[in-house]
Image 1 (cartoon, rainbow, N blue to C red):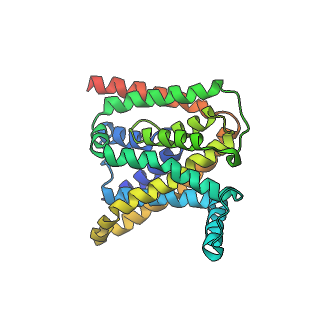
Image 2 (cartoon, rainbow, N blue to C red):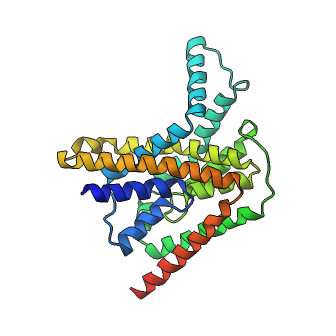
Image 3 (tube, helix red, strand yellow):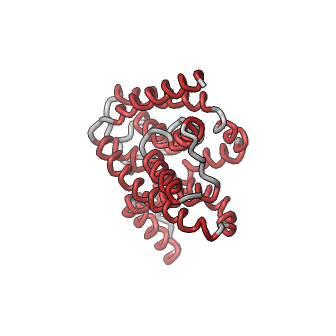
Length: 270
């Protein structure tokens, strides 16, 4: 693995992981049409850790508040879930993680086989575009995170599980689900990305043993890839928030339709 391959994949991962365009779908198409070698499991873990650090950096305030609330419980032994909005938020995040844990565990092999079907990925790009376009017709609600409920958490969590399908954007479908549920744009954005933290940690934890077998010559490319994913992820998160606040989230549908239709056409020509 060369450093420039790791750099390219890190930038691709950081941008497409957070923008609603499906990072997994782009990696499938890059491997099939551009002949870019897909990341091995070790590089994939490092890239996800880079994007995880970007999320932590952007949402450090919410994460810090949750940690303070947890420390308070351990110190005092008092449970204040109803009174503490950040403990309630943590509970909803854990609840919303259940669907992806179940789907990832039960259908891991089936989902893995989908990465070998570029035509299906192209179709899922088009489906994601339709979902994003549908948010354009929604009446903007103002329900904030402190008014989140169980159905919101489970609904967005189920959407995140569906986002395991390559070509379906995880951020796109979860933010859209939050908007459909009546959350404000900012709340849908924040819950979507806070929700991915347990998923990334869980997935990385399952494969962490592979990091002990890294050849010495691959250490620097892995670091470069992780840093590229971190920096491009920071940029993507800030750009996406600005776009969502301006009500232009549906604009990504055009890109998804174009890349979906073009890649579908190419797959039939090859």
